[in-house]
Length: 306
Image (tube, rainbow, N blue to C red; front, side, top):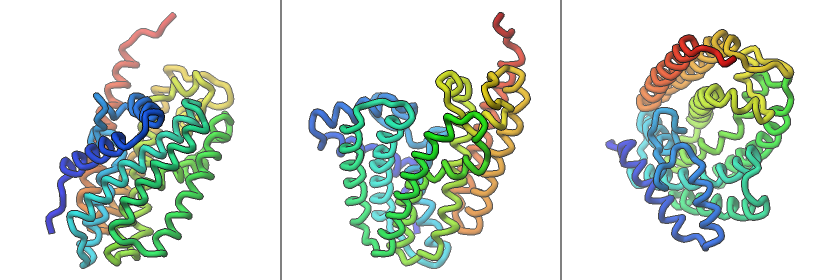
């Protein structure tokens, strides 16, 4: 069965976010527009869901549909498109909360109310594909784990000596809502037994992207008192600074962890019959290697400040 292309799903997701924004009242719209303006993936108000290091928001339902087909089931085109649109809107509910928790941006009361409304809209769209009570019980658990991870991250980021791999994996529970549209497709098509491996694949993808992002923001995070697992991998412990030497010496350790998680995506993608996921992981690894190589060349060739 032919499914919508990634470009088609990205277009549908952009249209859904624009339509949703037009439904907002003026106060909520101002908060929404300010949030989009802070996003690196948004240009002229339109999110780019397919840039090299974009979270696979619109791809997750496609990957799920491919897994369903590989297992002998059937997922239709409209179901995939609806799940992609719902996932895009739900993603920005999380981004509103993320900006508040991580950056202290926005009025807490207004963000709490608006993000709840945005999430409700996403759930309403997703529910239209026909979901079981078991899905909603699972979804509740995902959101509870997300809430705990958001609070845990605020604690561990402020603890220079406490950010290890176990802490990183716990923090990555904050990304589990990205799995929801894909698992909805699995549920609606009777492919629930694929859920565990599918979740692992998507979380491996988001973990690799988080490491890439954290390396790019390593210096900025230290300047505002935040720590990530990347700092630990770079050898930045306690209150030690992020020096050029540490950055150059530790990049291989960071890249090894990224490759490990992308390999999980490739292996699980092949097991599930999801060629799009394996291809995405291989493309992401090449893009990350190119970025790190250019950063390393710059570090080696640029004289240090005196």
